[in-house]
Image (cartoon, rainbow, N blue to C red; front, side):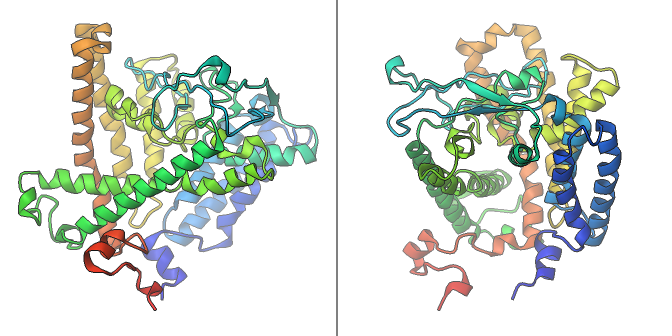
Length: 461
């Protein structure tokens, strides 16, 4: 039977001391304390040393870092030191979207730029539909959005409790204005879905495609000894003669990537069906219904338009964008790097993906390289993009043959980059023995091919 010790020492790190939980209590307490009691610097001097010290002790007790504790520390750094929610943050709320939620649609703007070709860091979060298309509507069929209300730091404790709670769970800081024009211009973001019914349909689609992807890739893994034999190199021959024309590292990297994409995709839309259902029953306000939030993922076309920058900067979920990029902006400002300079871009990107690497070290075994090497790919890609624009001009790459070449080259480049980087993810998953376990309790593939539908022994009678 799996014990807590086995879980936290061989699968994923977890709390080993009470100090682990102290930052989770101090951060909301700090945010609830008004400026009339503590000034900004008094608040930092009182809370941050304790948060840092208890986090370090928790890491020492665990023998390393974990995702949640690192993320909490970065969040405390963001909200208490680098930003000033008391003075600058305003919660942006819409009272309602419309009386007939399930009978009306609204247009979705999908034309926001990704990381720009000149190397500037774009801090906007994409409010596009999951499929990346702009839906054109007849004006008479659109729901008219009400005027928004902006709530600064509340003066009373009763009002501060929901304000602070909402801030702490708003990891992407959507529906918040931060006194940061590039971000504030997009707030509140356009809802990703016109109706609860549309959200439910997409959540079901997301679940089914993720389930099918996990099932089929795991079926392949069960026939490929690379995934369960540590001594086999990723370039060793493939198990099927029909696949011999495909480079082994390419195929295995794509299998690993498909598994990661399918697993992470289940963490967003399907689990949000519960709050959407509670909203339909009237138990949650509009601001807490995920179908009225920005999309978790941007349009796939950003990958082909901007390569690796488009993948990590616009397509992939932006859960850690502010917590890892804001320290980079602070470092760049301290170095006197301002505007859209190449130096600032390098500093912000290096710090952001370096911190992302530390967050991803919260796994067993700790492996930051897969995350940190993204910065190298982005630097190389930006230099090539700048050179291409300098030689041919920006307009050439925005239409006609130039656009076609751009889409094809970026697509091939992203595949090549993942082929080089995903083996790192595959290796520590292999060390964990992840590939020896079927990720789904019920396998349609297994059921149809072998008659054994249940894959988890603990569920078999």
